Amino acid sequence: MKKRRSRRQSGPQVSELTTNRLSIYLRCLDTLQAEGVQTISSQGLAARFHLNAAQIRKDLAWFGEFGVRGVGYSVETLAAHLRSILGLGAPIRMAVVGAGLLGQALADYPGFPRDGFEPVALFDRSPAKVGGQTRGGVPIFHIRRLKGIVRRQRIRIAMVAVPAEAAQQVVNQAAAAGVEAILNFAPAALVAPPGVKLRNVDLTVSLEGLAYHLKRHDANQK
Image (cartoon, rainbow, N blue to C red; front, side):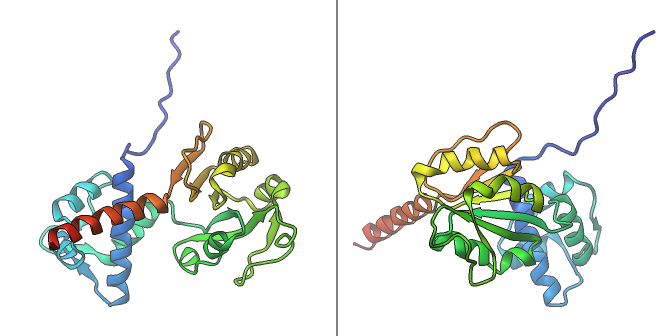
């Protein structure tokens, strides 16, 4: 008798570019909700926020039909769907590694709790910082306590704000501690083990891109 092979159900395989755009759409919808707008079409959304209507429809089509022909999208309902798609239900607990100016600013950023992210701990090696807290009240622990606190606090995301030469070691420690996703602000090419999602935010690269734009602008003005 042949064994029946079970097929695991999974969501659509979409690119990071698509999920990034979903996040942008959600921000736009939140703005519309705050203004009391109840319905909007893809064309209206695109015109208001300088987006692409066809791209909006294509992105949303990955996940179902959300609009009504001739009416558009319910702003409240679509925002709720996007939060669900992006996994923004219960608050996601985060830690920051590196209690310098950038690390403390990240831990205290007021936009995170509003968007469903909760920084609950900050880690460092400096005796002058360990045992203290940020202005917003996030406690600062020694890095050696990372594993225990990650497990106890059920921390899922770590933000890395340490010098480049220490970043890979921190990524390794965070992964070993059980963190599932890492947002790296260190200017370094890092590698995360299988099963841990790593995303880099290189501020220097972004600034250099802007510097190139300024140079071309200045050349065109001559």
